[in-house]
Length: 214
Image (cartoon, rainbow, N blue to C red; front, side, top):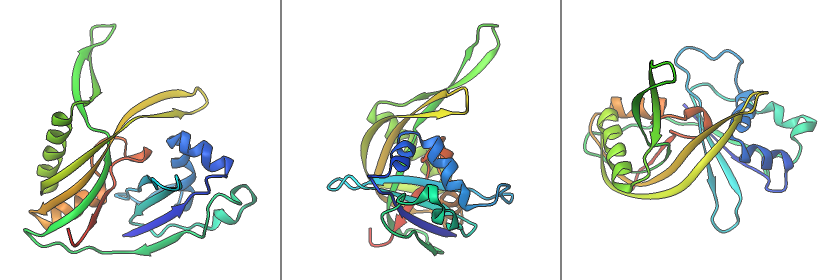
C-alpha cells in the first residue's frame, strides 16, 4: 500500500477550482494511475484543511504506486506548495489493540420509494442527527471488525460535485469522525482500510486513517 501527501497551493486557481468540485479533483488525482486499474484496486483520498493556515492537504491511499510526473507539466505549475510525498506502508494489527483514527464519511441510510412510474427506487438519505451518525459508524465498525471506543464528530456540511458536460449535480453530506477504536479481527480491519468505508469513495470520502499510540 502507498500513502501520498500533496499540499495544495492556496493561490493556485486550478487547486481552488478542484477543491470546489471533488469530481474534478478526483479526475486530476487519477492521472497518477493507469487508465484501466487492476481488479481490486481502490484509490481513496481525503482533503484535510489546516485550521490555522487554511492550507489544504490531500492524503491519497492506493495499492499501486502513484506516478506524479504530470505535476511537471505547464498546466500543473504552482499546483502544489512542495513536491509530493509518497511512501509505502504496511500496518500490522493485533486483536484488542487500540488505535487512533480519522474518517471523513458520508453517513446515509438507504430507503426504497416508488418513482413516477410506480417502480421501486432506492435512495440514500443523509443522516443529520449525531446519534444516527454514531450508530452508522458503529455498524461500519461491526462490518470492518473494529469497536469504536471514543469518537468526536465534526459536521462539515454538504459537499457539491458537478459531473460531466451536463453538469449533473451530486450532493454529499460530510462528517469527520476522530477517535479511538479497538481491533477485533486484524485481517478484516485491514480489508476495511483498503476498501474504504461508506459511500462517496471516489469523491474524498471513506479513507480510514489509523495511528498507533491511541
